[in-house]
Amino acid sequence: MNRQAVINVVGLCDRHIGPNMPFTQAMKNSGQRAFIKPAFPAVTCTAQSNYLTGKTASIHGIVGNGWYNRELAEVQFWKQPNQLVQAPKIWDTLRATNPEFTCAKVFWWFNMYSNADWSISPRPMYPADGRKIPDIYTSPASIRMQITKDLGEFPFYGFWGPAAGRNTSKGPADCASRWIAESAIWIEKNHSPTLSLVYLPHLDYNLQRVGPNDQLIGTDLQLIDNIIRDLVTTYENRGVEPILISEYGITESNKPIHLNQIFREQRWLKVREELGLELLDAGASKAFAVADHQIAHIYVNDKHIKNDVRMLLETLDGVSEIMDIDGKKEIGINHPRAGDFIAISDENAWFTYYYWMDEDRAPDFARTVDIHRKPGYDPAELFIDPSIRFPKTRIATRLLQKKLGFRMLMDVVPLDPTLVKGSHGCIPKNRADWPVLIAGKNAPLHSCEINSTDIHDIIVNSLG
Figure 1: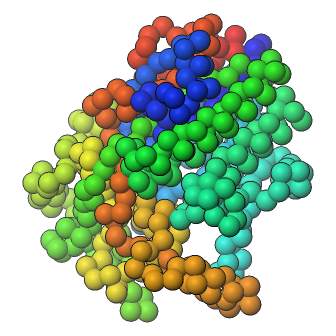
Figure 2: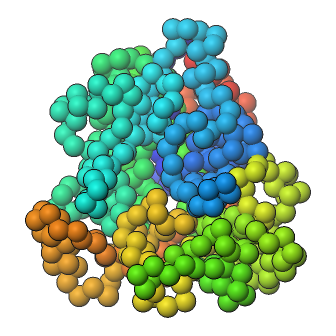
């Protein structure tokens, strides 16, 4: 059986592969390149689930990075248990035919409690005093201490938040992706998996923060190209065949759409007041939106207003399409977790989760990096609020409070969605904005355009 490494370079498109990425360009020129018709929605959790199961969300159930849990009446984002993916994964398929097959899953999502042989995932610790301490989750649990001892603490600050993709006093802009690549090499040298799945998120940050056309992106392309070079060279020297893929392309976006505020104006969305601030009360709402980049799941608890909700959505500027059950079936997302409707934005727009009408009433977590508590995706977490006159002083003060044992709120995230310049989730019209696959000449590619669900069989067939 051949050995293979699938390197997921998030946000990589064909338009990026040029002078700023000489190593990747050489791989493309000497091998094969295919455009991947994006998963729907074109977001991390759905795309990865399509790749690893060969099925769409209608089957595997991953309808986005988060969804509304109807039984618990809670919006839940970025959950990690592998059992959420309701279809067999590629390591199940391959192990069934070859018991000697092994798989390492390095920072791919739904990594907890999977039966992959080795797994590493970001998993901060949350003590009862309100602190968030960087850490990882591994399987087997024993490699957690070993890999941290050899590579140092995982730089979680560089994985997500205002410091991600930026040079800071804590580390360089590419520190998170560099650490992940080194951890993949650590697994390879210590265990030699048959299949290694490696996630490199570096491009994801500034492509959203400043947009895909900003000059700064050239530096990011050079940084990720260097990481790809080191990773691919190591694998090839050890007889492992590398394949590069990506999950989605990020397009220029400058139009935030506040669906929940619009629903609140219609008296459909309800909030609950706690300590003078407002929390979305999804279970009590007649209708609300779970925003996930350029798509939004619309949940309608009161079926009497279903037609009214749709008619309102159809009038909104920046909304390109509204999917009902027929549309969901056609695109492969007809699953009980999905919304009653799915709204898709124009390529230059995206959906916020904001539901408050007065910023002074926004919940305390709105101004922090808090991916699990927010009832929707928030790319503003990539910024420090520009209205803070001395942000370094604010951050230093908060860190001192933390060090002294006081409860503190790292309230530096802005509530200004116009800062965001790039987004994804819809299927871009231009193939240059689609994700890509780059493989060697012997890879079983039969077309220059493939579906996201084809990745599963391409990997299986490449392993032989």
